[in-house]
Amino acid sequence: MVFISPRIHFYEINDQAWFPAFLRAKVQAALTLLWTLHLPIIQTASPSELVAETIQRVLGKRISDYTFVDFCAGAGGPTPFVEKYLNARLGFPKTSESNVHVDGSEGTQPVKFVLTDIAPHIEAWQESKKASPTNSLFYVDVPVDASNAPQNLLASLGTDVRSRKVFRLFFLAFHHFDDPFAIKILENSINTADGFGIFELQHRTLSSLLVCTLTFPLLLLVSPFYFWRSPAHLFFTYVVPIIPLVVTLDGYISSLRTRSSGEIRAMVGSGAKGEAKGWKFRSGSEYHTYPIGVMSWFIGMKES
Image (cartoon, rainbow, N blue to C red):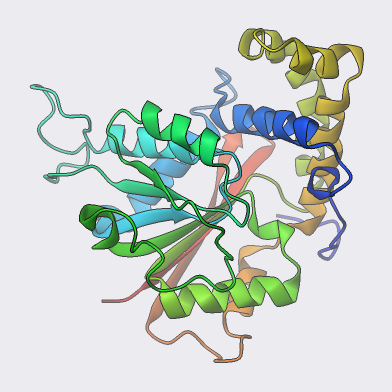
């Protein structure tokens, strides 16, 4: 990738306290749609399906060792869909025709996912939990600071959830943190978790800015099919187009805030405790929208 600038920590509209909460929820709903939308020909799968495939490919047979914890879940975001797609790839829910995982390995239980946030969205999470085909989605109902998460974070959940290793997830979230706070998050992850994954759909590239620009007409095109039950959502999409405008403008800002895998790797060793010994790091990128939209990922795993 050819970056057009160093990282610039601008501020996104949807993060601001003055931005109305009801509009923030609708912008988040539009962002979730973009995570789950599958456009034929230019997308082989939705971004959330791509995340599920990447996690399975990188972790391999160790995937069932982990409980996956989203540390910036918001109202749910892509995590409920990643949970569904990943467990479907693993052969869950079981049917008489599906007794083994798609990768050929046997499994007895679906992989568990947990939603957390500094501002819990309990009602939204409860609905997502009910919708899980495998009953494998859970949540922590108290605020969780990603930079100071306790090692016993999952203590209040069932044994099948808390007995596994913890793998932290950051979906379209890590770019929101300034460098000092991001370093604290990485250091806390190294000290209290067994793995983590950072996934971003944008970059500091011209092609990413083009994707953001095309998001505006895309939302105008598809919103009636997904938000027809919400007159307010349609009003703020077409009459006063705040939703597509904020998604697009924040997309530009997100692109300029996003770190490369090399920059994240350099941050891992810059905390108070220095280099992360006993950890292995991998990174990569995949097209989420051919030929200009790229999903990047950075995964760290504690070695056994």
